[in-house]
Amino acid sequence: MDRTTGRTFARGATRFAPSPTGELHLGNARTALFNFLLARRGAERFVLRIEDTDASRSRSEHTVGLLHDLHWLGLQWDAGPGREDGLGPYYQSQRAALYAQRFVELERQGAVYPCFCSAVELEVARHAQRAAGRAPRYPGTCRDLSADERRRRLGAGQPATLRFRVPAGQHIEFTDLVHGAQRFLSDDIGDFVIRRADGSAAFFFSNALDDAAMGVTQVLRGEDHLTNTPRQLLILEALGLPAPRYGHISLILGPDGAPLSKRHGAASVREFRERGYRPEAVVNYLFRLGHSSSAHDLLGLQALADAFDPQHLGRAPAHFDEQQLTVWQKHAVHRLAPEAARDWLAPQLPNGLDPHTATAFCAAVLPNVVLPEDARAWVDIVFGPAPVLAGEGADLVREAGSEFFAAAARAAADGGDFAVIAAAARLASGRKGAQLFRPLRFALTGLGHGPELAPLLRVMPPGETERRLARFA
RNA sequence: GCUCCCUUCGUCUAGAGGCCCAGGACAUAGCCCUCUCAAGGCUGUAACACGGGUUCGAAUCCCGUAGGGAGCGCCA
Image (tube, rainbow, N blue to C red; front, top):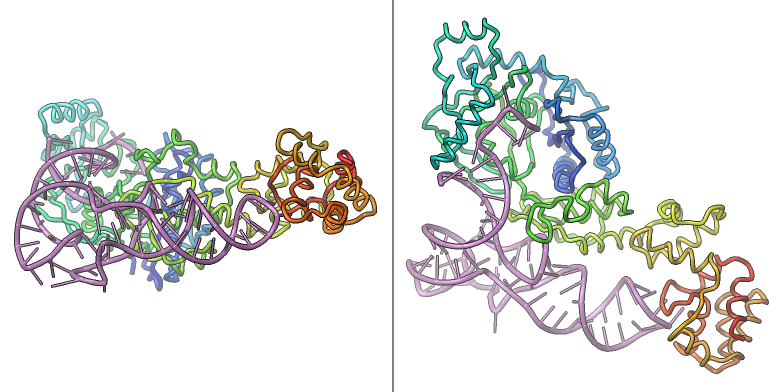
């Protein structure tokens, strides 16, 4: 039972709690995916919470982008923005009243105290500590102010943050879902701010409190939070709230070993989407990045959830490898249904192409396409002017001879399909196999490789096949 | 500086003392199939960061070293 709402949870929940300060990064997308899969696998709820307590850095356009990216990936949340269930609101900026109650509770216990130190004072103190070779921790200036002193300063309107009084000499232990037993000493943790001077809740506080309030029981999050976990456990303990089980997953690194960022090329979901990557490809790749599975096929989200195993989450940071993403992209593209393929390639197609031809064209070139831009060349070849031959192509065509092409062109003029055209050329020349097909392919497409010819010819403009063959007759 | 996390083929990883002169997937090389490319089939190349222990036996346990990462914020 949750004390905030007095409500019981039949099911557990996982959550993804992004902060709308930028675009959805691949690393965060993976975190979202893993939490989603963990929930789906256990028939639990997947909660989406927007952590926008920092008004100066949070922007609504980023929230819009975040929701859009998550939708695109197919990670539908069971509770969150647009899906209220009584435990919300799911924007932290709208939860101030809930936080206020808890601040009072902690103040009553003496678990927190107002801190009047200014940002510059703290900066100076940190600097001095570092210079002296010590850990930069809050020096405790305001920790033991008398009650009178606090009243006086507060009364005088002096701005104050609220700090959590970290108990001395305590071991904080928990079992990480990924890393196993963890043990920290409270003496290594300085008193930290849980409420900013402007009254807003700080991350450690709102994040931990909301997990409890929203019935979150398992959290997979970035490894950068591992050493922050003791702080959150302390808060939850002081409030008598249950802590979720945390699992800390590694960061995603670029090929050079540095944390993945824009300078490695694309790092945000938006960029991959705009380059034409399929969501199934991104999701399947992410599923295997820092997670191992015996499932080697391109899987749908539910199948991925069934195959997801938190036991097989890796501890070491994983390198992003676009070549591997490409493999999944090929799988995803190759299994696209004809209409879906047409929609995906639509921006590359010539204007005014009838839907039937467009669909047939896309189906024909799909095996040779990884990203939409790869279709461009085939659009030009099929719908553009007859390709000019040079080099190997010109040689092969000359070798095949004019009789070869005269027969082929006649078959084309009679309305023959590719099989008929090839048969006519074979009959006229006695050629077969590569000897037969290579000259035809060059004459028709200008290239020595490409999609199967038969379906390609079916979408060529009327008469075009004959014209291209007759050039060499 | 202090605390914490991490280190197996190019990449993602399996591996929780003998089943491992380390297995799989993808990538890569060769062959087969094939009108080319792709797909598919077969075969191959390729890794336990380093150094000490413990043990009959260590990729697995312990201790160091090196390298990488994170945290120590009125950012999340």
